[in-house]
Image (cartoon, rainbow, N blue to C red; front, side, top):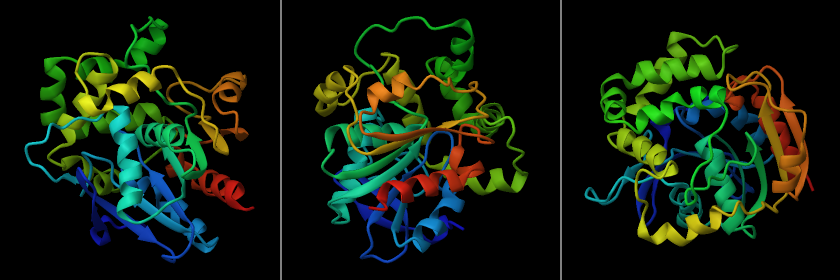
Length: 301
């Protein structure tokens, strides 16, 4: 079981990243990247099978979560997709890791996708939980269905002044509601939620979440250093590294389509596309076997 109390810390140019480190230090490394509004313990059931298969497993907190902090107390708390992607390669550089595999969901999947796009030589394999997750933060958004807009209520909420107040004063209730609705078949216990909830007490959590959801809807500026990267990502580049796409069969966002054409187009190196039955949005929690098996399959040669 992952215990954040035993986490290490490594300094990158911007962050002190808190992370768990499992397996032999000399083994091939795998990065497990969590999403919003979750945390590293989502990978509780994924780590041990990978260690037993002979891999080193690293589980970092994203910026704004858990024990990850900014080095500069006055640095703006920003979290556009290019930034969280850069955090992955900065993390690898700080640990002296030249090549690695990734598995991520939600924000973690987005960070992994960005990393695979800009550094395909460094990513040996990617398990993309949720599929292609790169955003167009440059061009005018097109309306989507009323159902989809309703499902994204939290994003619009975070783009309002009330959203800042709500996330500041009521974050645990909001997050618990998202857990309930995004994984309706997941009957988690109070102790499960309470074990995770301290990660959201990070002093940067609110600023990071608000910026992420405002930037993606073009209501907040990003860092100057990432402007060109965001322009490139707006073109929806393909991901060429060997990949397996896992889609949640019991997601509160609706069952995935059986049509694989989008993934086939965006992931020309895709080995498999699987709908994971019995899993909500946080696939690693309910089906850790699907995540571990996909990584082992991609790395077996």
